[in-house]
Image 1 (cartoon, chains in turn orange, purple):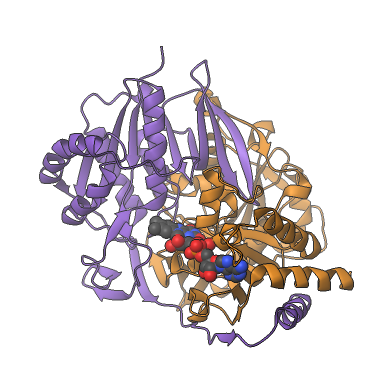
Image 2 (cartoon, chains in turn orange, red):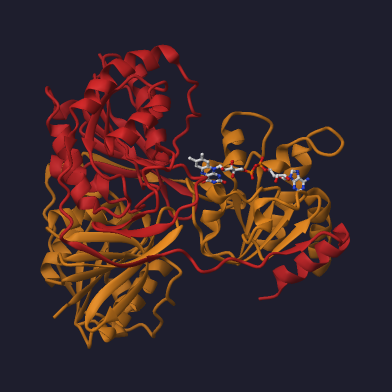
Length: 345
Length: 270
Ligand SMILES: Cc1cc2nc3c(=O)[nH]c(=O)nc-3n(C[C@H](O)[C@H](O)[C@H](O)COP(=O)(O)OP(=O)(O)OC[C@H]3O[C@@H](n4cnc5c(N)ncnc54)[C@H](O)[C@@H]3O)c2cc1C
């Protein structure tokens, strides 16, 4: 009989982020599908009581807490030690955790330590005849596999956006402390902080309805034989401001940015979508001045409705990659879109 | 004096991203159709890791780079034609499948065994580099397991920058959720760094470096040991291509004004 540990960590403010609450839904659904398997919740953080209270009525058998100032910091050595201690304390055979950078950094290492296995970027958990199978993508979202494993514990790191976050009224949870042995070696690395653009310049918004992708075309010579990079910047920034869309870029565009040519100053490698970039989840996506080549569009796997503006009627988007391709000049179109959005505001 | 690092860059090979991929069922499990015929490249994030290793080796004279690759050796030889011109390295080859369907734990065991077999391995100078996620399996777990086997618990994933401070410590930027970077400091080697794109453009080809490398690459390929990958843990039920191929509506008769109106309405509608 399988038993489950839902392994979560708090954010720096002590709260649980959306991916954590989604992992809780995934763990609970899995428990039900397995015929009422036990679920423990394991929490890692500086102080985990508030987070446990938020999910107190979730039906967990136990709340196990690995807490302390050093466990508030994201760091391999301490996070791996805490995860190991929680998994051992619960005795769970299946460990469901959210695909956050903090979990992703340690999942494989912890599985190795415990003689188990780990799979990441899981998009589905199915139970067939009492046995668990997971779904995940291979070759950068080009093909989807279902697989199962024999080794336990099996750490299941679930991609965000696949299930609804757990919801319920907060309560009071009894947290059983789990002690984590930290050696001096665990302190060789230290977390110094988070570096991010100022809030008004942060263009990556994972929760946004719309992904707006800019391609290298924005920086290329236009019909008049000149580039219009400052105009492009203005149009894109205004559009982002009005729609609160998340900004993505093609590799060609972010690479030019890295090479110091006349470029969109707010575009970095973090914006890159595709094979060697991100695969974000958004209900809608609009691509502009981007050719829609396969290494780019694999990053659109989880964008549901897709439209593109490109001057080239035979670009990649025309070949089944988008629902609608507008054959037009993106400078003209986006200026008019911005004007319409301004009127609506 | 700066540390003379031993930098092991772990990198597999993957089909050129412009290729169309089809899954097939082979005796040993899922595979790619015509896998051995598909042109291949060094796994892209490992490619960045190699450039970063080269920069570090230049700034810390006496450092040495080893490129550790588990791949079919005939295919790897082809890929080395382009890789060899980018940075000076010693190649360590394990002859085995490049497939994304192999188990990362088994791959990690083979990689760490290869690292441990290099004479003169010195944990105080050891840095294990690689891509943070491969373009095949994309699990991000392989390097972590390599680190665990080698006993390294200073591990960083999604690394975009590594700076060596004057006291020899590292300042590391890792990608985290929501378009941010986490800044950490680490006392020094040994450490595992799974690279994202880093900061460096692709270095130009250097035929001189290529010639030097090739002298070592051929013997390394010849003496490659076959990989023993334990696959008992893992079984695949299915591997399928996504069904969704969209019926694209190509709109080429509307004015910019009309297109803008359609787009604005589409954005508004939830
Ligand atoms: C190993 C590897 C990994 C890769 N990984 C990625 C990845 O992760 N992400 C990625 O994006 N790419 C990736 N690529 C690169 C990919 O193959 C393409 O080269 C890249 O996506 C092209 O970017 P682009 O469409 O912006 O630029 P281009 O191909 O230059 O296309 C520009 C487009 O802009 C259009 N255009 C120009 N002006 C206008 C205008 N005024 N109005 C409308 N349209 C206009 C043009 O018609 C053209 O279609 C990878 C390649 C390799 C080899």
